[in-house]
Image 1 (spheres, each protein chain N blue to C red):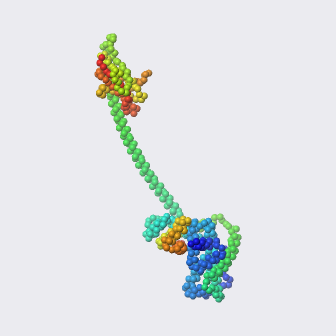
Image 2 (image 1 turned 45 degrees about the vertical axis):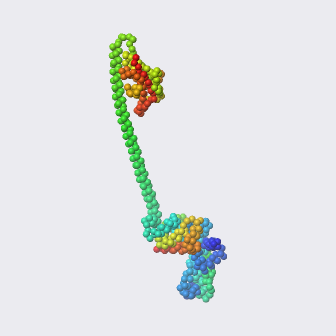
Image 3 (image 1 turned 60 degrees about the horizontal axis):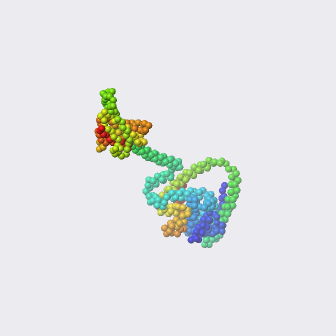
Length: 205
Length: 330
């Protein structure tokens, strides 16, 4: 049993309510869609960083509640929609934590009935993990081969070496590229994110 | 610059869930409205996964990271990917190596394919290949060692053959010399026998006569380093009746030889007479060599008796003892 955020009683988001919310985000429907995606991603991360195990569900529930307010005719923001979303997200989070506490109690009760010390399913999982690791290495090799050489160069240089020398080495690298250290960090992150995405896609196929 | 570093620390604390609520709300407000701020936070979060994978976090941060992120299956997978990628990057020994491998990527070389092959094989296969590699190395070592031993053996064999040749030659020389000495000895024996017969004949002819001169005269010679000058030199007077001169050469040195050779030399160094295989005799007063000289071989003059000894290995050495004798006619 796990903690889940409950939908607000008696209300289900309709296509019309969703469109109204998008229109509030931006008059142009395409840009409104982009804006929606952007806020959704940020909310998912916010819930993740707040320790929510169901970050996507919590983000969607946040949108539901905002859309409900809008469909009820409430003018909820003027220039800054983010702070409103932020506020609603914190309410959703509190509810999540309450249900999570409830779930923990239930789990404590269940833990009294722990069974076999060596679970056959565990052994199977370990075997699968080993195979998954091998596949991961295969995928990583493929993804690195498809990476532009300059990106591989940058990422290798960024991570190579001792921790104590990380700062100095990265500063030097940023200087050689003629960019601030923060921009270098973002660039390295984008490369890593691209590799990770490539590996995840490879593992799924 | 310091503000930047402080801000980075603050964002990391936010990500690790250790920031007070008030500051947490502030950070969230900022990244929700500021895309750059958000991406920076994403970058820091991503970097935390790599720092965790490379064990670059402090123990406290590590614990917070595990608590904050590792409860999710997705994040555990991210750690795995980060760990694999970090390992790949640390495997590159240097930046140049990485650059080279990048440059070569379009046309993968044999070793790259081989490396890729090893990485993609299962653990059992990798262990088998490693064992095979170790066995191959052991085999190569064995072959090299065998070749080395064979060379050493050949060298020793050649040295032994040379040594054996030398010994064979030496044995032949010794044998030839022994034959020569035997021949000489036989001759001496014959000569002695003739002399004895002559002596017996003479004794028979002069039987019953009194006051006849002795047929054998004995002299004892002591060795000296330099030639004695007359009158110190031992004198021997040739008499008509005497046929043999018995000489007792007193040995001075401590070294004992198997046998001795005595050569009689004239004053100008010409060899007059020689005898081999003489044995030293021990008496109460010392050691002596006894030799018999027929009077007919002696002519008046000064003589040197040179003594040589045969060592245990058969070589003939100077004893360093010289004897001098002056023969006069009576």
